[in-house]
Image (cartoon, rainbow, N blue to C red):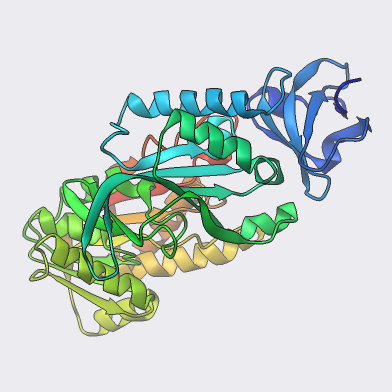
Length: 410
């Protein structure tokens, strides 16, 4: 036997054959051979029919992460092929030579546990001096299988999408479930302090080393453009604004004013810097505050807005947190609905997979009822196309972005 084999219990292959890539510890009947932690294993069903090849991790509840539906090793050639397929998908909707985008979206692109974002723009020093143009990558190695193959992955990335440097941002909490400590630092080449990227006709500074996640939330790109369609002539509130993607898009689209709020002082500074970078400083104000408390204060002051954007972090990190998340999302949306003028537009988001679309819709209806408002649905959206959603793997659809008009009850 060349490679270790994982034999599943009866019927435990059905979910995997439908497209899900994870093999859990309680689904395994036996292990044949001695697979190395992080090594390749072949998965077989109870009838000894092949299911695929996977990364093996005996320390995780997810024992196997399927990377191929055909038996094969996860070597450099495999990653070159996988990255090539991922890039080909992006080329159908974007121009990777001029646009920043997510290049690899983990399991949805057939590379379990790996996230790679590609940033195209100009280097900028801390003093604001412009530097050379280029492409830099931000990578997250979130599972043991890709952690042990960094050299092959970096070599494959260099072949498929030549770049000037790769910064590793493997500091996500999920690594602990794989038995891995957080890790950050330069992985290849050189990466500038900041990269000025273009999005929806605006310029933003992305910080690959210190920004949230991989440096910029690329998944909301199209949703920011969609929200900006309703901004002209409106007072806009951008809650959980981060670096100002939604708020600045609204300002550029003709908003009368934009009030951005975030609990992070760094985020507030980034909003103001980006506003100045785009000639929008006269219409954009940013405040450091807890969004829940801030919205209550605006309600007491009887403030009203024509467009409100809610883009909070994930309130439900796991299944056990869903009920608490429901209460948090409802309170937040209730406050926002009370602040909207008649006919005002609410753009409300959730980035938690565990808080699914049906739950999100139910929460929003409860908030509207308690706010004494009726809602008219404008659009239901999700993440942009460089974060592909694939059947059989529900976790690939995580972002909800619902746009509604708030009407008075009639």
